[in-house]
Image 1 (cartoon, helix red, strand yellow):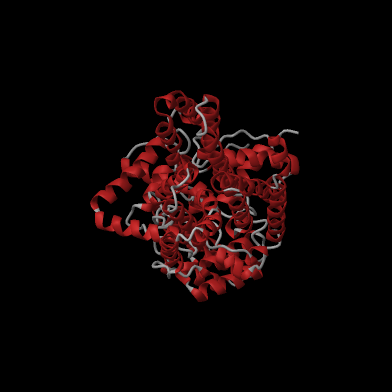
Image 2: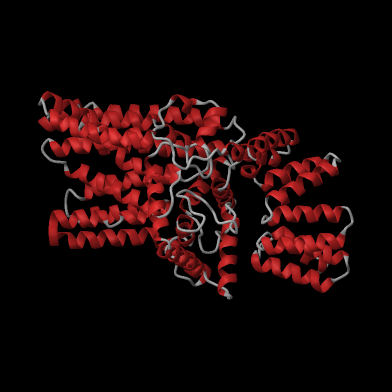
Length: 606
């Protein structure tokens, strides 16, 4: 046996990596199973619901008829293969995510080993395996686990490529990085990092490898770009939601997190309809998806240009939000769920600020004690670039989560570097590094400047889940909790659902009172007004219902049920032309509206 073979045989890390994978997998599988016992388990919310339905449609052999992609198709494509094998199973989706996330844990440990050796690898692996947000986002059918996996693979491939100038390495890295962009659009900002380092290390010899890298990226995203071209003869490289996402971060309503303008709903499908409708109404003509995105992008840039002081304030809010440990969610409120549905994640650390502090400590210590290794510099630059890519838009917990791909391997280097510095009596270096870590921790644990009590919203989400399951008692119970905390934060739909339950129970007066309360609290909410018109129609007040429905249409012109109601009301009055016009208006907004299509079939005697 050669010396190299003997050293490989004595290397304990392969065994450690295997054990690490299974420990990480065990924790994640445990949480996936516990998740199924919560109300959320079989009721995916917002993006999770959209990805689940998309994947199931593909699994059943349906065509990918989403038109120009508004959100990345990579995760539902992959999830559809899981559903083809396991059926429409939410636990199967969670187990798929758990498997990917466990591979991510091992990958992060491998990256740390390249930068800081076996001890850094061990610490990174343990931190990653136990990091609660990683575990949490495995349970629902969401793309976060895939994003972390691909971005980790991207780092591994990039570090491997930087060790030579072979074009195959860079081409492979390009494909992987392109797939990462398909999972998380703002990863586009990271694409120049590898070519930059390659040029810095190898000069002109890096030209051909960098071209291979660009070609690899193009190969990865080409199927999506071609799909979009075939769908609308429009050049949309990946998705068409970028312009609106930029507007969320730069608008009169912006607050640093996901503050939507009132004319746009937060559900992905309705959001796409609303953004298109607003853009086309304001421009006065039909727009292609790329033009809709450009419309919102230009509005964001225009707002930033005319409000520089507010932009500086927003940047500060987003910076603090990125490094602060306060919850800023958009699909699932991690803190609320931890409090009300205990699980294995309750026992795990969740503070991204601690990881950031350890990463900064390790980087400063390496810099002060003999120079920062190339791999650590690469990770630090990626962390800065990714942070900037989020600050350009807006901050939520799951949008900032991928930064841990770069921070965790650096954090793992903190202990071995600290031990070495202590043995070498580098007291000044230790002091400077500790000061950097303390400042970071202060940012992490300071009270949030924009703290909002979201508990009413969280109870409204549970009310919506109970409503979907037909649990009327739970609907009323959750509504009462939401309303008692904050009627405004509960939202108009909370009142509508509770009113519907009272209506089913024959308590019409109570139902009308709740709808009237909703209209009074949310005068710009067309859906609340639609429900007022619906109750008027049930009472036989057709003229009043028509007037209310027309007012609702002006407020929320993309809500399909309004056009269905208008068509039915006009039909009851014998005005066939007006009924037909309402159907056509609704189908112009959403050509796939099943209720309106059913009315057409009924009119044709089909």
